[in-house]
Length: 216
Image (tube, rainbow, N blue to C red; front, top):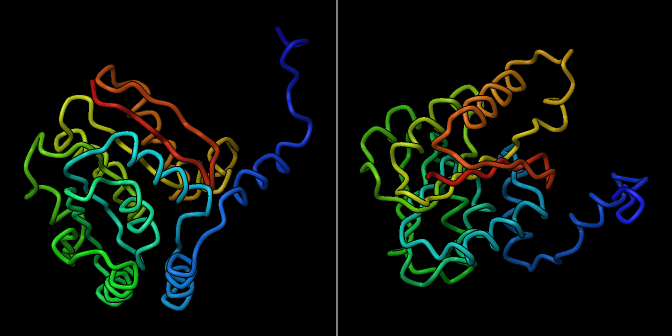
């Protein structure tokens, strides 16, 4: 089998090629500039493209995004979502959300399609309806990641999709010697999902790692 399918010798080159494969337009590029100005980490180009494809494939009617940032990931999702879909997005940073609103406006997205909540996920998520969502994107505070995933399990309908970005914590997760809090959090979430028979999951190395899991 290995003779028929040889392993790539330059994984970084393959990753870089995949990241640069999709050219982003001016709206997304300006959203990235605002992210940098706000000091907010934005998902990579490859991750944004993946989010658009996942949204288009799932065609969910209700989506939750934990971590609005300056709107890069929200834009990526909305470009794949049906016109009827409402995105509920939350972030404790009001300034970042203002930048996201500007990005959504530039993309000519009707305000009725986005529901922005300023607040921490630990306070907001328990108020959202159980089993009412078909896609949950986790891109918030690493310290709250396990809580966010547990809440996602509650909020997702059967067959719903969980997407956790930065799942490899910039390639630190596979390095056992790294014990930074964000790395430990990412490992704990991966273990939580991998060992729970209610999830079917996989990790792809796009960007800084994306954990995908479907609720049975």
